[in-house]
Length: 123
Image (cartoon, helix red, strand yellow):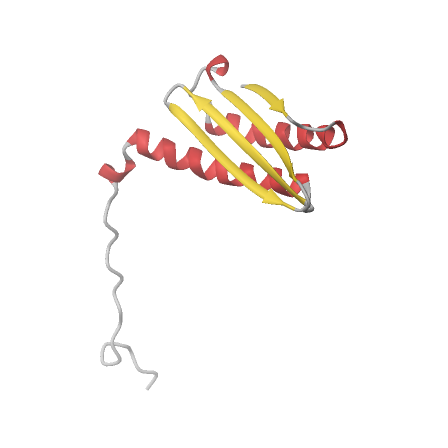
């Protein structure tokens, strides 16, 4: 997986890189069927002017499509974690669509409920 960053200030870069590496390992486990050089992850951090708020945006480019996730938070690390959580959900949903899980979904058996007349008594 190729990882690139943009617009990240030096004071936040080390913590965001560490968090990105941790989450990239999780994504690599989910994306193990794709060729490593075909998967690109791009992260971008923006500070909202006049507010103590950060927005982190992620773009994950796969051979089968592109996924985009954003999150905001008062700390850059919180925004990073939120964006990766959203991206992981999107990757799982994307893979379910590729596998056509909606076609193969089985109906669950109806649970059997005991009525009071059927229950055994303690007499």
